[in-house]
Amino acid sequence: MSTKKKVLIGLGVWLALAVALGLLFGSEGRNDAFQPQEEFRLTPWVEINILGIDMSINKAVLYLFLAAIATTGTMVYIARRMQARPNRVQTAVEVAYDLTRNNITSQNMNRPMAAKWFSFIATLFFFIWFSNMLGYLPLPINTAHPIDIFGVEVPSLAIYAATANLSIPLALTLVVWIAYHVEGIRVKGFVGFLKSYVPAGIGGFGAIPLFVIEVISDVVRIISLSVRLFANILAGHLLILFMAGGLVVLLGISALGVFTLGMAIPFFLFEIGLIATLQAFIFAILTSIYLGEATADSH
Image (cartoon, rainbow, N blue to C red; front, top):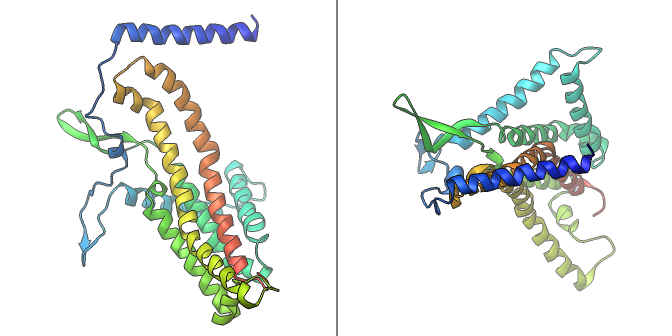
């Protein structure tokens, strides 16, 4: 049987299954009780309030804790078990190490700066990567829709990523933003750092609007760096949520699940295989560029 016939038969079976489900179950109507935004609401598990600051433990804190353990634990475990002939896990970590050291850090800074900031940038990369990857691991964290097990309400399985909450990427971004300003001022001095906002060779009145534009551009980095990471991870989780069943529940059309589930699997694999790593790479390399730019001799 040719590949074309196999594909046509598969599509025919897929369509027939959807039609059969549609005839059997029909439409239950719109489900207003299901609120997709509840999947991302941070409900306090342990309420902690210190001097008016909400420091409650919730699922975002849990995922941050898990990402920190995964990052530290993996690096320590591999470091203590280095072999002359590395196994697959050690090889993967060495490839990631080489990526952060030679491709991300060394190519955007001079040697002294790269040696000084490599550990910081590598930690950012691995921490964000683990945070993103853990976000695709179903855990019992959905307190909005608990399930009853022998009379005990247990949180249902759900996926969530700490980086899908804007406060986490924003906190990381502020650390980066402050770090490269402090480093730039340390290397060039306060006045010299301000002068670096204007490209060499431009003076007089024309330097004023350029200086203002560069300052605005520098401040906007706080938004662009944090929102890029947050928006990509959040959008991916929303697509998976709707395609994996959220849209079926929301519209009350069971037959729709045959189509959406078929799209949810590629979305899920795409997010894990590319987006999680790509966003960690982009955040780390932009951090490296900003640090290198802040300390470079010319603009």
